Image 1 (spheres, rainbow, N blue to C red):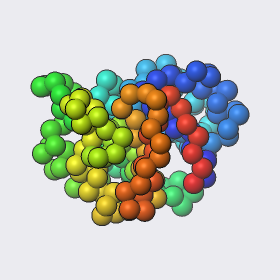
Image 2: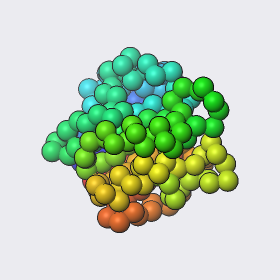
Image 3: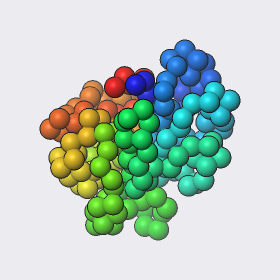
Length: 183
């Protein structure tokens, strides 16, 4: 299964051309993209899954005919996907930001899946612990340790993309812009 994953920055190559060139089975958005970036996707008939980032309005996935996976699950071609939106709270009252405690409560509802999508990284991987805005979530780390999904895709932390890491058997992949991932 081929995934075209988008996060945080509009791809340099127009999205329609990326879909035509890579022929993904699924397009995944990890958040913090403008709604216009996803506009071409309905014309290509490709399945779109996603979660929102901390700079999103919480509405554009529906407009792009995408499945919002926050605390949800979808199965495509026998592969299951689940998701968690937002980031660690760094600005009181901001939408799509959670304290570690809030995230822990919500995170208990993330269904088991082969692939976990999140905007923020798991604690200890690809995070910037000195920068509260780019800390990882404890609950995502615990999920990876307990469930051991094959893949955990996240965005949020600044470019350049960090090398793939592991938590147990889980590959943790950081995406900035776009990335093609084969399962």
